Structures are given as C-alpha cells and as structure tokens.
Amino acid sequence: MILLKEARQRAENDARMHGYYLHPDPEFLRNLLEGLTRNEDRYGYPSCPCRLASGKFEFDRDILCPCDYRDADLEEFGFCYCALYVRKDVHEGKTSIVPIPERRPMKKQTRAYAKVVETTTEMQPHVPSTESQQPSNIEMKMWYCRQCGYMCFREDPPHVCPICKAKAEIFAEIIITTQVLTPIRQVKE
Ligand code: SF4
Image 1 (cartoon, rainbow, N blue to C red):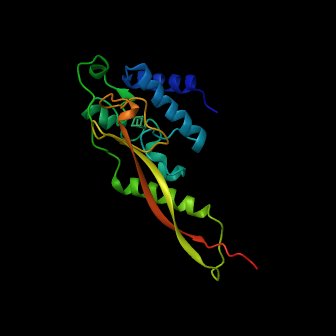
Image 2: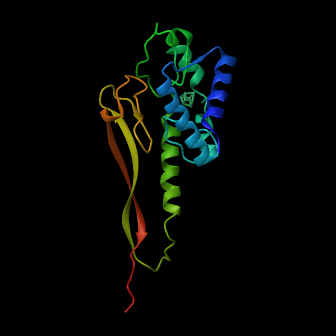
C-alpha cells in the first residue's frame, strides 16, 4: 500500500526534474494525491485521478501519472488535465487554471469504458446457454461541476473543483448505465 507521503515525494521529484511545480493549493493537491494512491492500491499502478481507468494495464498505460499528455498540456496551457502539475507562471498565480480540452483520444477513452463494462459483466455468474437471461444494468458514477463544466469519473466528488475551486456540494452526480444479460433465478418446486 503506497502512502500519501510517498506519492507526494514522487510527484515533487518528477516536477523538479522537469522544471514544473505542483498545484499551489494544499487541500486540492492532497485530494489529487489521495486519488493517485487510491488508484495505485486498486489497480497496482497510479492511474490518473481525473480519468476513468479500465483496470487493465495495457489499456491504461497512457494515463499512468505522469500521463502521456502532461507535457503537451503544460506547454500549451500551463497545467495538466487534473492540474496536479503546473508551470511556474501558474504556480505564481500569473496564469489562471481554466477548463482545458481532454487530449486523450476518444478511442482510448471508449476502449477503457468498454473494458470496465466487460470486466463487470465477467463477474456476473455464468449461465448455461439453456437457461434464461434477463437484461440488467451496470452503473458507473461520474461527477459534473455545475459551475465550470469540469467532469471526472470518481466514487466521490472532489473536495474542490480543480478548475473553478467550487466546493464538493456544487458537483452533480451523473450515473452512466449500461445493460448486460444476467441469469433469471428459477425456483425449484
Ligand atoms: S493529467 Fe496530471 S494528474 Fe492526471 S495523469 Fe496526467 S499528469 Fe497525472
């Protein structure tokens, strides 16, 4: 189990090596680092705390923090998608953090989502083809900042929005539902 202290140290070292800084707000920074440690405990690798991971390394490789998109985002906007890493001007408050487009290709996002659904489906009990099946729903939770439109896949809303600093109460929960087939239990007489 990785500790928050270790995750912080790792991020600080990486930021220093690349001439970056970490988000200046301590509470927000802590929230992101907690997301990273939670993902590392869950998947075995620190996938991005703001994105949906599939749980399969080969599909999530590009969003292991620091992700493949960080440097391009820092160069263009001054901060990464989650705003964990920021440029000096952002750290000093000279450039504001605003919503930025997701650089991760839609194809990879869709593939991750499909894998999550597939994994969840595999966990359903096996039904011999002769038995009946009925459709049931798998739900995935997403949070939407009603103030600035920032969205993230997480169990709980962020304490503070990384973009507009709105509090957790401002976030709206969105449930994405996918249908899978599950067995119909038959009662023997
Ligand atoms: S967007 Fe930032 S926090 Fe997320 S994986 Fe990339 S570098 Fe890490």
